[in-house]
Length: 263
Image (cartoon, rainbow, N blue to C red; front, side, top):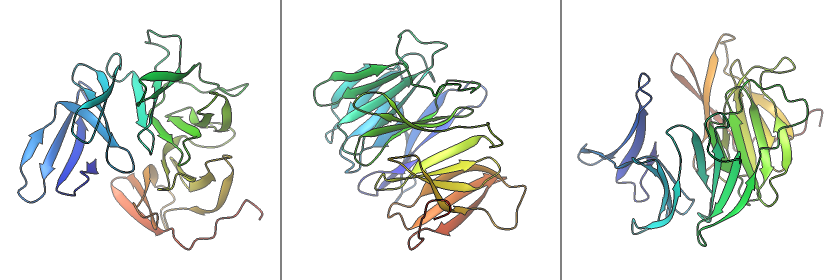
């Protein structure tokens, strides 16, 4: 979910867990009026001038400030493409489900202004990678738009060069004693990555290098907590962690001195 740029509406997407069909709505906060949208999963650039949406015909579309289309891409079958808009709104990153795709590429990046594909590459998994699935659920560009971050339920999290498609770093999941990486979030300036594993803790990483930093963030007093989501506030001052069965714990993030392990 996300607020519209002027703060007057809240837009959100819901999924039917039986049929897996998604629908998006917008709510007028002043009146409570709810309207169904002709697209799903809206996402904005930092300036809130461009919006990335998926139309009902599964076309991936970037809309401009006037609501007109800046770029249209065939997104393929439902739930087989994951996409992200860069902070400036200049780039769109895509990953394809390799089990049901009609392209030889796992990863693509498109330039919205020119309408040209600027990168097409197989996803550069690390040597010896033993992940169960190559399906990716979440994408995000770093603040400098030099790295595209992708994560999947069992495959950890990876940073890929926007220029070359080469692997920059990997945070692997379900391996070497680590639990599944449940979710990740980038800081508002795109320089830090907070990764939440199922059993905790939340570990902050340097996006440029993948280097883990300390301290870690753990929900106090609950060793059995099942971490499910993590996110930064818009000003970067707070870090929120959601766990099962529905609690949200908020940590103060500003003023925390992050250091390398042992540093």
